[in-house]
Image (cartoon, rainbow, N blue to C red; front, side):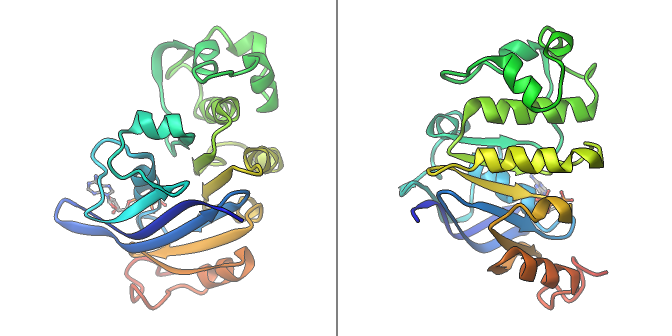
Length: 238
Ligand SMILES: Nc1ncnc2c1ncn2[C@@H]1O[C@H](COP(=O)(O)OP(=O)(O)OP(=O)(O)O)[C@@H](O)[C@H]1O
């Protein structure tokens, strides 16, 4: 397999505190990789650093995408390379219609079809604005539809199942599998064990450090056996 994303020695500090320390993580093309870890261990921060969100610049380390260092690139150039991030708190775009949101990329296809794929009736949603009038679960679904429409090489999904009713977990897992392709990978952040099972590999992040990478079952087992020893129970206490 080919390395799609290679993170070496990545560190990040904010407000005078180390949030991530010397993180190494590799994603192969074609894989779904799940990042597990307790609240506040740095999962979303890592996602923001890979996406190049405003205010997130590494204090050390490199991020390579398809062999090329991307640390210096702004978010829109990373998006152009095929990296997309669906946020834990789904974005709102006042005034932007769902139809327009789903046709932002090149060759986006039919927005109605993407809405159907996430279980939303196109006639009821296409002309609505992506704003607070949509429920949290509806916005989550629309963000997933947007990720499908963009056909990214790397989809970073931050808690894609949060706020979506349990019955839909199987549907979300199916969509995540679709985002994986021969040249495309998914970095999944989730606390939902049922959803984590969709992954090929897993990494366990605690106190800003990746402490294990391997088969999802064994990493999930380490996660259950908290505290991990790195943080002495400060972060991943029961
Ligand atoms: N820009 C920032 N300034 C100050 N603190 C920050 C910043 N970004 C993240 N943090 C802090 O870094 C820590 C890690 O946050 P992060 O959102 O990455 O955790 P997480 O693992 O995604 O947690 P959760 O599972 O609760 O979503 C938290 O303590 C958070 O408050």
